Image 1: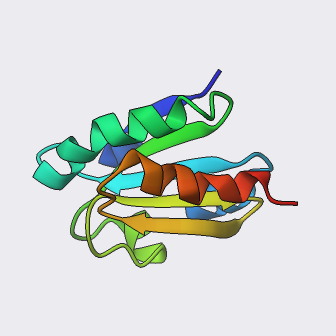
Image 2 (image 1 turned 180 degrees about the vertical axis):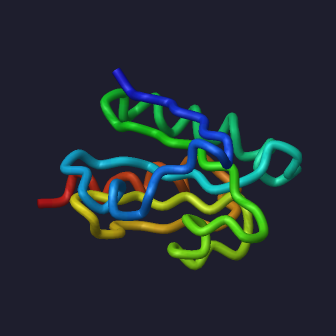
Length: 110
């Protein structure tokens, strides 16, 4: 079953912790008050239905947040698909679940 973790700024993981993960993870950088982020939630949920084992971590981002800066996040939401410390795909302000599914397809490539 997929893990959906929403983190407050006080619970932000370290970049080194994320880089050390051996399983794939979808990082979602955004803010709870962000209209683009709110609009993307059903799109993300629909895409993740096809990847029930993929971990998904929501990270509250904003000025001075080190983790978002380490990934060069500038707009929200930004989705980053990572596996074993490498970025496989990045989507900024996705507008369809198909767009997200296409990015997640990197997990099925050898």
